[in-house]
Figure (cartoon, chains in turn green, brown):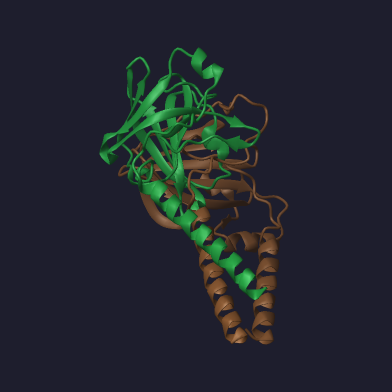
Length: 178
Length: 192
């Protein structure tokens, strides 16, 4: 009985450690092609303007933008790039466009190093480029959802996890360059 | 692990939880952020020398105060070199001295008379937090509308990290493996 119990413990332990290794590998491995479709939504395809790519030259970040939704209290998030909240206005239009992504080194892990004045470029599906200048950065708690509120200007709010065990969010707010 | 140690750890944990519960008994209002300020502008200066509560230094830069409600304001200061300080102002009317002391222990400053800071002649609690800005940029009040297109409130921002998962898996995996091998060794010794 004791041998059986110890075997279960060892198998569980090895499974957990293998999962740990996988997650660490996933965080650090460059984005790769995946057969899984992150999200397809008809509302997204009805739009004429779709953000396609996010570029932050200062941080050597160049990532695809994947549309996502907030439904039934859950945020969709991708491991393949940056998530764009579909119910927010497209980047470049009046309002607050919400973008977020994992803090993996291959995704937005370096975002916390961004400074006010840095350029964030969003490229649409029609190759239109929108250049935003970072105005503010801050670290907030996950319940400070007012950063998602609408605005009168043309801005993007880009955020990722930070802090001890990802307990906080690093937020960069950038306004469209006039 | 002795019974005495287990009892001590249990007692310490209970006292810690009790203390945390008492400290959380005072419900503070929510404040928007200077990153996306809401409400009407009470006063705005694009430049000048300003004071920050709890700090005797003088700061030069832009300063804007937003009215969130009759009892809450936020002050967004942005220095010329891009250092931002957000001050949350809370007009207190029914807080006991004990409550005020609890909040002071959490980093709030007690201001007996807000008139000295251009506010009402009432008592206020104020709390500072840092942010980074582009220098002397004054914001405009937001409209406060939701971008989510849904009627329900969002409980929190997206979880964009898995450090907690990795940490828990590593700890559980490590403990489980070590215990497994120890049980196996002790079982083999018994069987000999």
